[in-house]
Image (cartoon, rainbow, N blue to C red; front, side, top):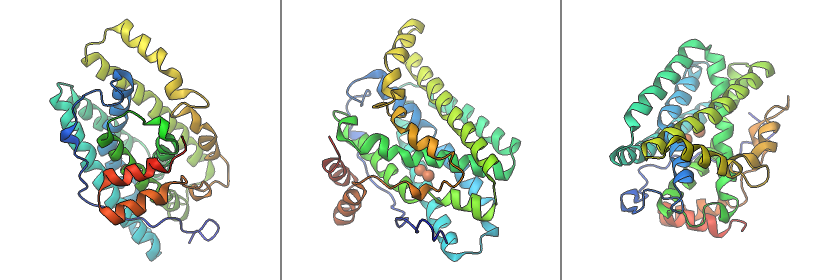
Length: 294
Ligand SMILES: [Fe+2]
Ligand SMILES: [Fe+2]
């Protein structure tokens, strides 16, 4: 399978990692910055339910997979996503304890995802999953190719994001391969689903960030000012966490695109080596950042 692009990194499910999140002292863990912290909180808020949606979308085609390598990949993909969901749920409970309306936000988010699952065909849901997975695979590039992006942020949360980003790179082609080789989704649906995924990511992260900031006591004009002030941090074409990924996002729309055509970040092996040696995701994250560009 995938002879044109190789099989890529091994998909290694790592279980019950301890990030020491309960030792965090500052609720604004990203350099004490309310906007950037809440933006990233909002981004990770939807992971548990989002990942359940990914698993459900891929599982719908599982019975049709005949290739034993792909079956194994799907199994490991599901195990990784299950672990991600558990880790982010733990952090979501900490956010709830800060007095944020997390349970209500998650209920609403789950309603949206359930509506998508029911409204779209299994093929479109799988294509949307492949699109979202392209985003999560790019997270590593956004946050960890350069050490300056996360400098000064709480190392426990950074380590959580690093582990997640590493595993997203490992399984970045699983949903895509099932979509192409098993569900036989064509270019039009793949591209349409990616447009949908992009709009959903951008609109949801804005909306959820705004709700969190409002719950923190920021009034309308203060929030509008923060959104404006941080626009380039998110969407700046060169250094914005998502803006800088635009070329890789556009690459997804090429007819012959495959996720493994894009190389993983250069410091991926540093995380894997350090984690295998120590079993400690904080040390692995240190190694990842030590080998990152400045
Ligand atoms: Fe994940
Ligand atoms: Fe994923």
